[in-house]
Amino acid sequence: MKVLHIGKKGNMEKYSAPDSFLARLETADAYMGLTADEYIALAGDADFIVADAVGEVSGALIERMPNLKLIHSEGVAFNRIDIETARRRHVYVCNSRGMNATAVAEQTILLMLGMLRNVAGNDRAVREGRQIAVKERYMADGDLRELADCAVGLVGFGDIARATARLLRAHGVETICYYRRSPLSAPDEAALGVSYRPLAALLAESDIVSLHLPVSPETAGMADASFFGAMRDGAYFVNTSRGELVDDDALIAALQSGRLAMAGLDTLNHEPVQPEHPLLRLPPETAERLLFSPHIGGITASSFRRSYAMIWEDIRAAAEGRTPKRVVNPW
Image (cartoon, rainbow, N blue to C red):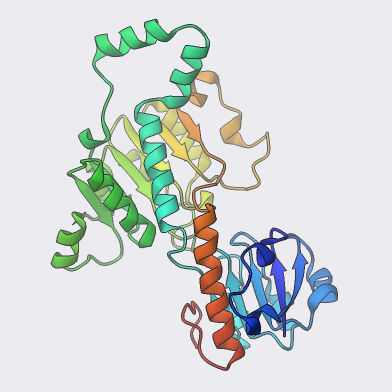
């Protein structure tokens, strides 16, 4: 049996199968961005595909792989896999749900604290010899905030948002609200220390709003002008989910108007990000209101170990004719 791996070469070996059965699988490594013809030439007879979470697995490729039984995302996202074609062909699509929840939650908190303490700007101030001037300004204005001073709203409430809520509680945050399509039970809310709000109310009440949603036709571009217009003046915005959730023009307008104090972004639309990206070509007074990280929230070594444990478990199930545990396209 054979696996076509679409992504970073070496991952299949680095996080190798835990038993002799799986270790005997033949592996064909391929970079992301190849054509269906190129993938077919390399491993058209493969039984399984393991793909980077942002790697495309097209319907044209799925249709031409007669032995294909399962496609597994290396991450949580699976929006670049043609799940309808896979469903029609009775090919399982699976993801590694929960593999990076702790890691992305940590990145979310990092961006929140980084904005509240203006880490990038203050680092630059010290390097430029302005330490005392900046410190005295903060003392005079009295506007440095602790995370516990803030009401935090989590838009979406899956594994990552729940892990974020736990870290927020550890930082002393008392007001944590969330929005999703249906509220949790009262006992679950009490256990997590969170309260449900409709989206409009969450935006109006939160000092920090953090996105925790997958990309879908319903969520793409949801952080638009009306979304930012409903937020508190001087609020902070965090996105550690997907850049496609955000309307870049609306975000820029909210930063320029002062509606947003800052935005902390681990991901941007149109990755890999190029120098001409609109969020990288802003005047200094707007640019200083952005704090970036290079989409590293979910790629810790521990996350990949957890992910590949899930991948091997699901591949083994499919190889043995059983239904994998993490199917996202049931038929």
